[in-house]
Length: 119
Image: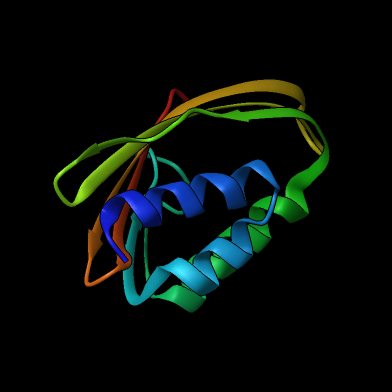
């Protein structure tokens, strides 16, 4: 798959709330995932670890009120999207989230992702 195709599929999965399906289908086994500096899971390596990171996040959520993912912007083998969510956490209450995600695609799979947001 080309970068554009991977980007469009990832956005669709995210819009449907199927993040784990996106990882299973679109991510390389050796994916590297970076969160904001100082976050609990700042660097995660490997598909299974990234799935675990996502499952952990979902376990902390009480309710997702809304979510929005932009259309991807493609540049070579990279793409970016903005994501906005309104989430109530089991601990910490309701919080709006705004982030920019950057992805790198190699051989039709996401090999790197990095998320930029304020903590």
